[in-house]
Length: 233
Image (cartoon, rainbow, N blue to C red; front, side):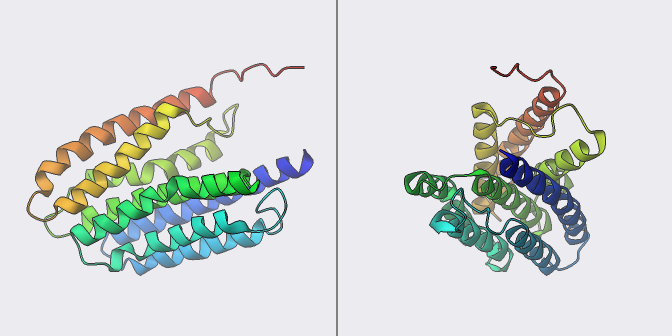
């Protein structure tokens, strides 16, 4: 049990620094700096996560194929800005999105599912949304600055929890929240596929999902301030 608590503390501590670093890197990219700033920052941060949690990557200690797939997926996400804008980015992003459930399935089959893998998978999801939002903002004739909101929400939430110190340090993921996050990602992929000719039509879908995602994070904020459910004795 102590090891589990120590691992959770390590993951939460890393996520705070990661959120601050990526928020700053995203702001720099949004202001016109090269995408390499975000890729380098995220790459170094995830490398630090691997080192910090070494030996605790799975319940048995070894890294495992599922984590290898998760981090290969993260590497693919960081490569998206170097692909030609339009359908190719959307196809690759859709493939990366489709791999989201594969790593968890592999981990469960191998008996290696654990907190580290689930956490890294969640951070990979957030990174995919951030990269797609920045791409859609930076493309000539792309979406307005409002599209950065869904990309930064995850990191803003982490920093808010770190500063506000609510009764619960982590939100419980719900099925509804997972569906909203997944549909948010698919709407961004659809906008990338529609670029440049029809991106204005897809923007309405992205805007609607942004509102839904904001609502989901508002619910998460409410839950971390709600009394924790009583634990069985």
